[in-house]
Length: 442
Ligand code: GLU
Image 1 (cartoon, rainbow, N blue to C red):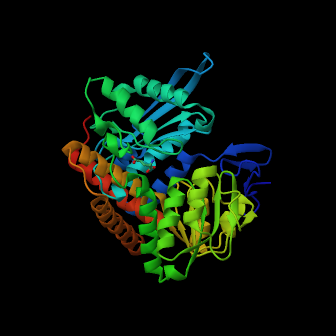
Image 2 (cartoon, rainbow, N blue to C red):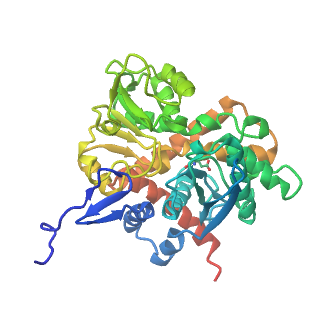
Image 3 (cartoon, rainbow, N blue to C red):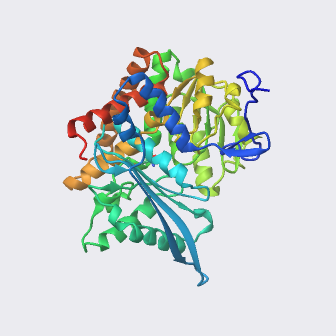
């Protein structure tokens, strides 16, 4: 029988790996994260009606590098790790984006994350392109010495790719200020002088910016507050759930809690908790600092982690990994606003379902852009050698995030489209503008 739209079987998400695969008949097809970015880009490009060849030029990653990294382990043996660095665009400035340490890192994922960085930097209008790196490893299972040797070997192998005017890494999932310190130190050996601007997200004593660790969460708070204002939702009377109580999830929750938001559902990799009266997020952050888990927090109920996404709340903050809200479960989401603290938590198919159901999605490339915005401030402070107060950093971040939010909202409303496609339209327009002005050298 010929396949038609009505008899074609819809793919369903496999139970065991909901974030990464779809199943069709007996075969398992991974959801390509880079494929998701392509779909988002193409949908926005169709609306912009721009020169097709220019769109092709800005769409694909410009350079993808794979390295095998030998590392001496504490027991004296050697282990090979795989590392990646992708530079998606250097049209508006140096490539910019974090380095991820996670067992599931793939080239497909790093290419997607690098592309999102290009669009994210353009949305907040900072003079950077997009890049991303990753190493396949489980940082929880490596000693500090092993992590240091792995980081230094990664930098040494890729040293010619990096530089304050070329490609500037930062923290991402599984990395933080300590990894950035090793990065800066190893890179600085190259020229026998301190080069702080090669990496952002450093500790303040090494030239990091005040406010950088909280910046992504602060940006999530600002964009959620603006979205609530647009929808007429009173934050002091609203509820929220968070998937992922790491740096981004916890700071978003703490800052939104200060605006009166009641967090009823919170999860992390170890489990999920629920309290209809509202979880004391400050006390939970202390508990997690001590025990590394939300589980065991007193006077709350334990729930199944996946139910976090289906909580009946006003605001849902996915702040974990990609492909969480998919075609298979989007219809179960019951919130009014999704604030994407993570990169890529919602697939394009899920976006369509959410839009139909009237859920406002604040897309990752806007919602979590506070991190890279303060990375830009850090880079500026490193160039000048003069450091701002935390109030100054936060004031400038507020200004950037509010402007970006309203640029995107206007684009979405003017074109009767979603905030995601609106954000891509703003970003693509800004990148194309620069490419057209510079011209293509060929
Ligand atoms: N990894 C963060 C992101 O995905 C921060 C990148 C940066 O500061 O360069 O936006």
